[in-house]
Image (cartoon, rainbow over all chains, first blue to last red; front, side):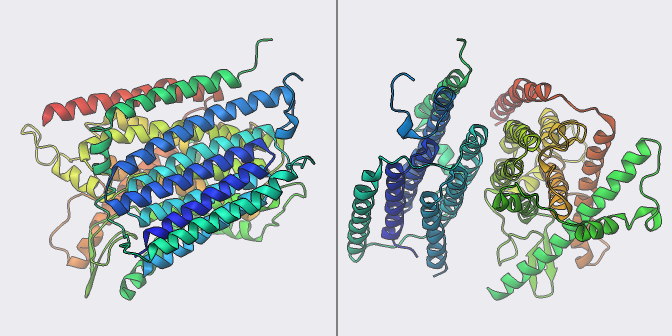
Length: 100
Length: 167
Length: 356
């Protein structure tokens, strides 16, 4: 049987890798992907605690986190498409002027 | 014993996928690495006995949200990410501090684990569809209905934002 | 534990061979049936009635030159057909084909994923099938994109958009059956069908299938299945007269054969799921005078007959209908099938609540 600490350790590592990617990467879509990685790491720790405390509320919360992540991905990608249409670039360093 | 071996295999796949996500320069490779991470997370959920959450992780996250990402990457034809020369600060501060954070967290978790920490195994009765359905449509009915309104607003927002402007 | 692994391995090997043979001979059946519908013979020269034609095709595919054009994105180009065919062949692992099979000292269920005790099933079998269908979109999307070709990209985007649109009505049409059966496990749904229908005015010989209460759901499922497997009347993304050949334009020889096999294996999976959920799976009259070993195979025979009938309907529709235009296709899926499936769920749940 797997101790709880192993699951939490894996969740921490994935979350910190997501934070690292969010800070380092310059492509806006890759930054979005790192946000999804962070959300997945949090989901893992929720489910691990749900199994440890024998409580199902955490799994229902995981369901809601997934729904919110899906809605946020849809709207965020629509914003990226709208910005790409005018700026012609996906590099966040180049989107630095309010008006073209 | 088998659970421990399976946990280590799929945790290694998760971490390898996440590191590959950071190491790749083309966004489509990052997206595919994230799909691999999501798949192995679904297996870890099955090891924890959460069968419904594992199934919807594959159907919704890996099967719909990531398809959306792949569509956008394919349509925008995002090339290899080029490096603009101003952002080395993030490398110099980011990598060491994240490494320290990970080290601290894992070390304290391993220290905590030496105290009484009963190991968890899968309890298939706990995460079954019937039990989650009782909770979702009983105690959490209002948040469930509110999320349907949230999804409707997100659909309308995405359609409006991605439409070609009239000007 | 070791006998369990050995039995599971033997079942997997046998079932994969049967499935690949069925896929190859479905191609033969399609060519013969469509040929006869169009008032011509199908393949007749290779072997009696053209029965060796699939073997000749297989040899051709293996020996043909496997071109990889220089401008493609190689890792994904090679990965995409492998992904398609692996996912198409995976779903056979969950499908139960019959009851217990006594083999001397051991009993095993006619299903690859069964427990060592000889029973058992996966609690979320139907969700796993839907998940495999969702991931199958990637095979097509990545194939079109990695080919680095405008026609392939457009064809693959159209095919992926069509597949994810019709996945919704596919899943929702099955919710009506789940409301009547009460479980997501495929074996449970089949046994629930034989227990249903306890009205007094139904004669005893009437088959206890879910297709009669859920007729609308069955037709929604049928139409969504045609769209999911990219068959006529929904095969615009891969038709030869449109968009060159869609997402498999740049593929040759064995990789094209893999896409081909994946399409027919998906057809087979969809037919198996329809048989299990709507037509009672393996239930049928079992004659009692046969020895017990043969008695375990008679339900398998009924299952095969029903799946074959379903595939015949697939091929019949292929020979009969013209194809939809793309905007008609998307409008039909979103504006007609999806509201109809939701209405079916509402009516079924009201009926179930009234009955209990």
